[in-house]
Length: 276
Ligand SMILES: Cc1ncc(COP(=O)(O)O)c(C=O)c1O
Image (tube, rainbow, N blue to C red; front, side, top):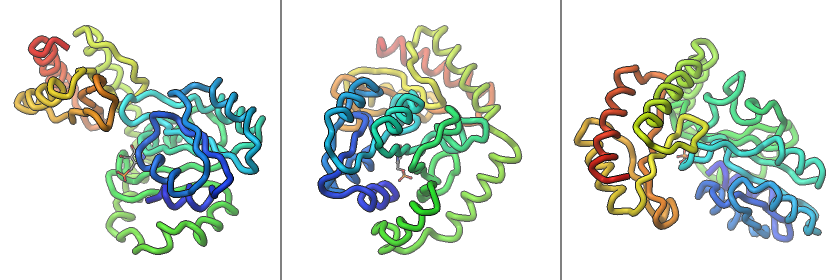
């Protein structure tokens, strides 16, 4: 709803949105609803973004990307994107659903991590903040405009007080107790364990997919993991392309070393059983 509200308020018919091919479904839907033209670039392909920008005669342009990609755990090349935005007079928007509370010196997300500024910083309260809802951060002018123009914000009931209170409490914990430090230690331990088992890792973050291939193998392997006491969602088409099924494991700061070792033991078993 946040993406729909923001994107369809800022972009209109005749404008151009430039969007990563692996951006989240809510961005894709929001782009369609805005009625702006949309060009999709291959995943993290900055040279393609530049080609599109160079050829564009549109009055208003927006480059939009996930900060941390939700199914792969890799990070958008934001410094290059921001530089292109400045050079070609395009706005930059980041969906930090998975980076809020996790990335950067202040744990505020991808722009914080790379120490760059973006025009529109959107995120959810539903991941690290353990609540529901979304937010947008940007200039006073942008926020004022969205308060008056974002239809999915204006024409629906506001977030419930418990959701807001839960998110605020989570932000307090993130600022005061700095759980991200433990999260990154857990990520390092888990990735080392996976590599030792022989699992290939392309993730840079706490979302770490274990590639399983076809949909049947993926769902059977996820069910076997659950039998072994580990819950990790099996991801198959249409969420990911055909043949690119995976078990999407993700870590929390509150996982113990025992939890991580138990998960690695279970993954070793499914790796052998399903030959993944
Ligand atoms: C990148 C991204 N944006 C937006 C969302 C939507 O968040 P929510 O589940 O809070 O609606 C998700 C979550 O699934 C996501 O991964």
